[in-house]
Image (tube, rainbow, N blue to C red; front, side):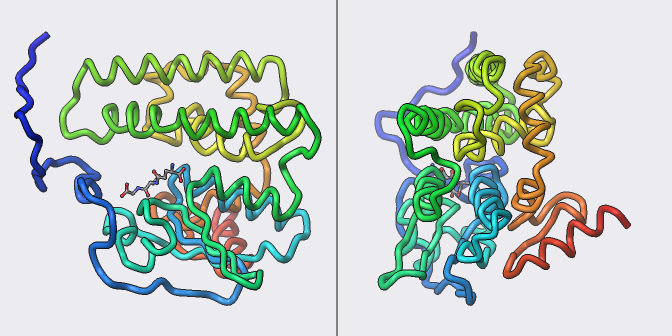
Length: 286
Ligand SMILES: N[C@@H](CCC(=O)N[C@@H](CS)C(=O)NCC(=O)O)C(=O)O
């Protein structure tokens, strides 16, 4: 194996490192420019984009709304991460880590900022008393899988997805390393889903809502175009689960919010009311 790159003694920032997401890579945190965030009329303000981490939250909000909880009405504002919107001063005030999704809850006496998608799912589950069992050990099993996802998805996205799909060069070592890990993760999910209908048992929960946008999209061929490469059809229990969840109306609604790519019926840049989603989904049947 050749090794053409000899790391220097001290690494320095090369702004032109190439690749699809090169503009978002910076070695420092904090705001790059002053800009305030827009604010809508609902108690919940979401600043996001329909990547898998973004879809988790819009699916969760649509699931809550589907159960008739009108207090979950939300404005979903688009943060164009490819353009650097996550580095505005307004966004950094909400999430100092400059990553979508970020949520602002204006329903109480004091505004509450919530960042990290796992923290947002937990916050909403507790606020509305939904999709997280109260009793033990069921509650802990849901949290086990929620935290599993938060720790595992970066290997899928930042590791496999990055080197298989986005990197400007195809590096066999990196692709092999992360393919191995992602296949191990899929095998793990498959074995779990052979035993249970949903990931943490027989109840749909925030664990499914967190995991589906990543591994559900992956095996259905809607992430990284890698289903064939990963031989995804062999993970039959993951496939069954992914299809089952894909049929849920709230998942179909949440998945298109803050999405700016795909077919016309899959794209809704901003959501301010339920009928915004209805209008887009209707395009599919035309
Ligand atoms: N651990 C974070 C990860 C969030 C994350 O990685 N967001 C990506 C999009 S999926 C992002 O905002 N990237 C922009 C950037 O890295 O500058 C979470 O779960 O919320």
